[in-house]
Image (cartoon, rainbow, N blue to C red; front, side):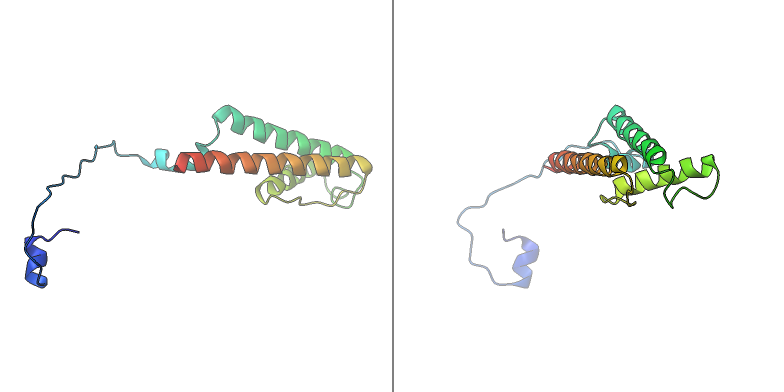
Length: 135
């Protein structure tokens, strides 16, 4: 903290023995546009990895539909409704870091565990990469 002329008018200071002159140097950066700001949350992963995560989630959702097609979740409606519902449940499970359906078959339970482990790895990797961007 340094005594400046403005601060000397507000309070009584002792006389200074030595005065340091400091200059703040900040490099100018380019102004980020709207699209750059919207892309910030996606920077921890490469676009190909984001596509791989989306593809794995869709594949798991389709396998869930096949394994649990006789369950109460997919009995009603057409095949298109079943596919859209399974995609919704798959992405919801990934984003809420918890599984959004109860598996009834043995294959569904194995898929449940596998997708839960996949979600845990994705979220942990994203968090670690995001922390490295902030440091």
